[in-house]
Length: 592
Figure 1 (cartoon, rainbow, N blue to C red):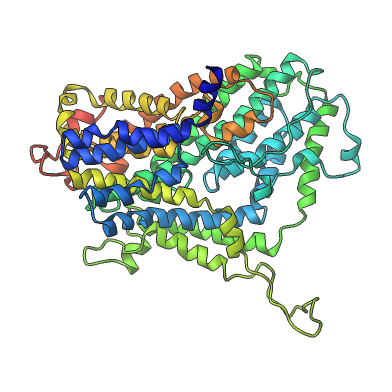
Figure 2: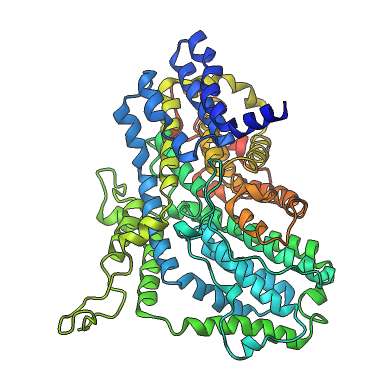
């Protein structure tokens, strides 16, 4: 009997793959309508995404097969969704992020900020959180965490030592400080279909000799890095994938929206949210792991001066090992700043941007998108040399000149680009389009009309809590991909601005703080061995609640002026929303 159960468990993913489609077949058979066909596809994909019986990217390809066979959409229409403007923005933004990571510019920024902040306990926590959040705004939160956690542990090792290490006095490299590069040999290949994560540096040795106070500080430092990586990603449109899912689905479901969600508008909404949440997270982690003795937390009466200097020397040594800024780092910095400036000034909304002035259509709208800008800078990275142009001899062939390599090459991009996320994004956009074309969105909207009597702030907070709970157990991309079309239909049915519920739920999908499996940064931190699941759950539970409350503050205050949430937009009207007035100030505007 035991052997039988073991065999079933070993083959559980194969059983799910074969049995789930059969189990759900009564839905399209008994209700032979397009709405039921689309619901079958969505439920099937949702279950596969939750169980990860197949890789997430493979499940995302289902609409290419199911929608044409079910008569929902032509195959050519479905395939277009897999390379939409949001996907192009993702590719271009990742190219720049890969260049920053390839030339170690992110490490230089991190070390420089830590040198400024110093090693006082509370300020050290804040310094690591600020650096991690800033880097996570632009590069992968997984790569950011994989780099910052070894730095944190190297600093803590010296801070907790009774004397400075001899290696540091000699200026030698600290082996625990190195960021492990992702490569085929450095990945964990799991027996199931979950995504492979980069192998972090080896965990520190057992810390039985440490006091309880030191253990708590180590736990707090580890959590501050992974939490800041998740929080920082919400600040920019390219910071984390759910943000791009929102932009793509808004453009797919509401083609006449006038590019309401762009880099500038998103930053104006999400950046203040990120700052508030980051500071509250810092205070919460400080209280939880350092206690209420703020005088001691800020360095008065803390560790001896020798230990502080030893920890500071760890950062100084590694900063010196980087040497002066190279031409490549300077070039990447200039292109990165140029990219951000072009994003902000393309179509900011409160003044005519360069996109409206130079590349406008007949309506005066910018024909250039954020994706265009990202790809433009990405292509330049393949052209600009990594060394100052000059006449350099080829050492392998004396007498012949050799051109310096470019800042970015395709081999590096191909190795570090998460192609699975490109397919996952496309699958989400295809699902949203299929829901609209099949009439499923309209059907769901009609069923949700009783919610019209519920106050909008209450609807938003309940949905945020639901999404935040769901994303602890499932991929945040899959979660928000499934929720957004339903939320859009619900908003149309009850005459509520669609972004009033779509924006907060998108941010809530990044509030994965409680479990190691919730997000890759949590898994990387957990792999160092200083944390138990209960430690992460204890810290993450209240942080989830704090996050939802901060999001509610954002969506009911400054977001109104950015997205005009006090009106029902003309671009959201459909055949079922003709009764919705344009002025809904009384229903969503918070009271005085």
